[in-house]
Image (cartoon, rainbow, N blue to C red; front, side, top):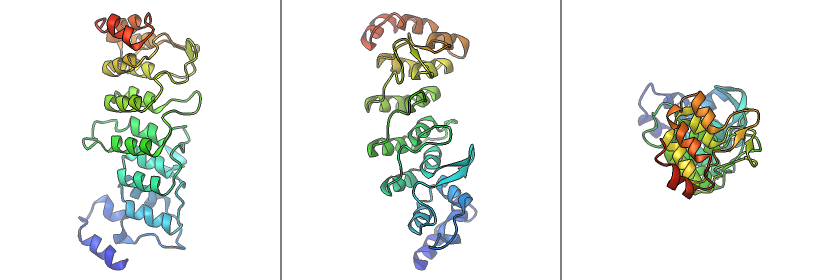
Length: 257
């Protein structure tokens, strides 16, 4: 093990985050205490060797909850990894038997976080999409508990069309939690509408999203578009309110923008 660590250290550039949390500074050993900050840094850096060593040494368990930015009360390791787009750590945690549907204190699953991030267009390598695919292929739920947002809703809010198409293809419900005419939380279509994500709204409408649904004591997708950033799609959504399926929507409304 020491020889392997020494070899690794020769190839790690000095000064980067990986060196701070890597085996160069010592991998976790049996009997040592959990360092939540260091483990969290290793996850974000996608330093799978450190994470594996911590779990195999029983310094942490695969479903450990540790403090992290936004979730200082503690959140599962797999949610930290998914939020960071840490592909190797997520794949290791899946193999090690982590709860794929463990939730943050805000009720978010790892798949929701992979569908939402990144928020700044910095994921040119598609790390978050790779994380999402690994989670779905391993059996992570495409939905959420009743009256909570879903991965599809998070992807629609961010306008991540590749993610929307992928989730729909694998069976995500386009109208999750929507009773006839109403919902307790914003539907994916509403999330796209309020952000003005026209291409995302079109994907959802073609898949049968119901524009007639209204949040209890709240708005429809068209009303949210008018209220927030989707002014240019109000006529499209109003037309969609009169349709009954994705195919009818295509014929009647696609030119309503």
